[in-house]
Length: 397
Image 1 (cartoon, rainbow, N blue to C red):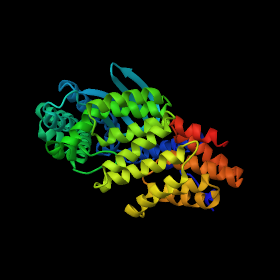
Image 2 (cartoon, one colour):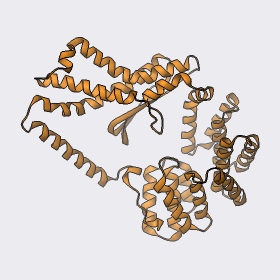
Image 3 (spheres, one colour):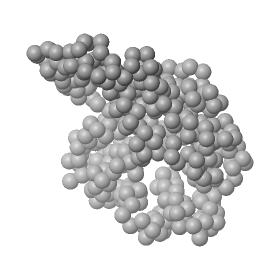
Image 4 (cartoon, rainbow, N blue to C red):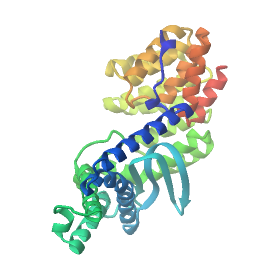
């Protein structure tokens, strides 16, 4: 039964108990490394310890390289994030938000161009600046100390430290220069390769990236009127941008202008009838508007979802919409089962917080208090969208 679904820590922030267990595991791992280093001690055994110690400074240098290059090329730097997991510290320096998280293993920078002038070349340079900063440090080390000292046989802790720093640089920079997609973005290597071939539409999205992020945050905070005002301004500048249009329909619905949102979606469906990809996107938006409306037009929802399902029979987003509708329409058990199946298969296609919201509603409607508490707790840990909070409040969970 869906009420037996467990929410693993990897899909939500750690609880206090899990954080303590993780901390203890980290301490034990550190002690084991120290034992391995100092048992029958030799200078070369310090290498692993030094590499771990140098990893965070090199990560900071890497992200600083991206940020500095963006600033020098007159791009905005909206956010610098070091680490992943639970947020530890956050502060603002000018227009830049700096965030430090629990596990300092990876990081990213969010730069945004101020104009389209030389944008492809500038994008390539900004991608290259992260690993470039690390490799520049390695070049300075070789210049000052020489190749033999940095890469030769080590006979002192100082030389081992120098060699370990060189290894940390080569590992970090080398990995980031590999061309691969990361799901939420691309590696530096793929960014360097793809930047010269950015399409005009991709350039437009880069120019809009800051505004779109701000609008999404306004909507998540429940400030729909402000978001709608920003969207109207942006659509005057870029009237044919499909992402802006979709976000505008979402903002209309969030601002309780459901009839206007419905009319706008119908207009776009008619205008994009020969574009299957955009038809699919608008059908999903049409279904979502009805799902979240105070008085849903279920016939419209069913027709939209039927067409969308025909275009993507196994799409998790379509399955999630259908399952959520089942929960709201009196089939909480069957809908909850399908939501649980979507959850198990989901790898980012569907928002976890949204799945947990409807699982919470399903648990409430089947009367399972344990599952209700478990889903609600997990939802509160991952959710940052006021819309979903209001949904749960409105449905009495």
